[in-house]
Length: 333
Image (cartoon, rainbow, N blue to C red; front, side):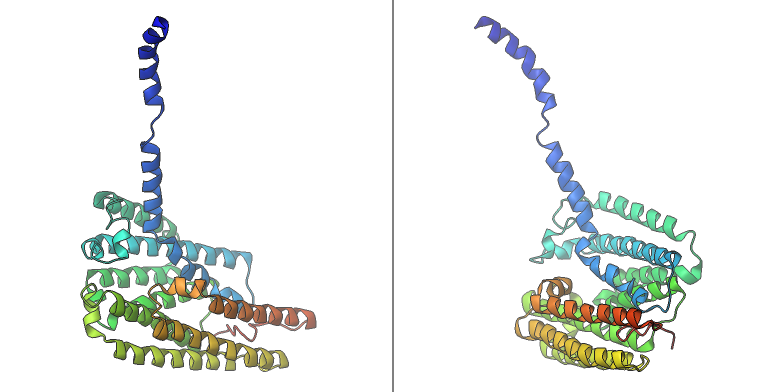
């Protein structure tokens, strides 16, 4: 018994430093918070929009696909940099928001000084990536950064201007994909993407008006629910018409006509479903979540994607030159 009592003090000090219970969870929590600052849930819009021109390209090579992949990486870094700077700027206001108060900076999980250092690292990584690009290839990313800097510095408080700047980010992503392939984008595709993104952004503003009110976001003072409802319906109609005109530019063939007849009702139904979620069920607060978690919308996308794959297979089976397909007429206008 005495031996046990005399050896215990010798073993305990040696064992105590070997079991750091708290630093590991804290380190892991900080890493998760830093990753959360980049908002990985929002990367879907970059992964979907930037490579979009690949689907409609008359021909593309591994080198072209590689340039598109680098454009995706550039926009992931650029958007992450924008999110970090914006969250630093909005941290005081975010603490008053029922959802945004859980963001890493607003909640205090990431100190402001560390957040600024993180932004510098992201900017350095982006600069290193763009350093070897010609201006003609990097301009979508540079314009995106300039617009969002102006947005963070004050334009986000200007009604209508705020949603147009947010929507322009999608146009610049689309342009980056086409620039990477050396192709020109369809003007009707640009209109369709812009109006669709305005629809999503306005749906988010509507949800904010109903949940947190105009006090949280100064720009909301320039909106009312009825005004936003009219803008939502306007952009929904414009999205459908622009998409129909985009399809109408495809070369006429039996396959084209069949796919057009099938894809247009699917697109219209998906728009109606989203309007139902926004106007009836008060959804749309997180457009990405609404789009990817609504089973009906996901089913519409899968059917629409199946039509595209069937169009590609038909072109391959018949030995025709698939310049763009019925769904993606991607040649220059």
